[in-house]
Image (cartoon, rainbow, N blue to C red; front, side, top):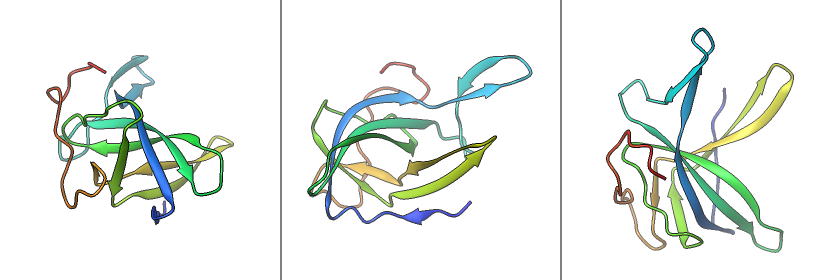
Length: 122
């Protein structure tokens, strides 16, 4: 599917929570941590997104690597944010992913980890 770059200059992102992304094995009916082909864990960062002049919405942004640190309702910025439309079994939506999450004003840096990769602490 096509990945569409997202311009964030008119958006404010407020961090809410971080959870580990999971995959579901249909055969065994079990869930396990989602891992990239490179062996990095995937994390879901829930954010309140406010676009200038509009109501805020909750979205989840997928990040790979070390568990990102989020202070509740503190502003965050994303580097390399993309939207990816999806359609599966009659359902459709948009997922979001980014290369990194940084504190406002920071450039080219990943957020500091707060727990070892693979931990299920939230």
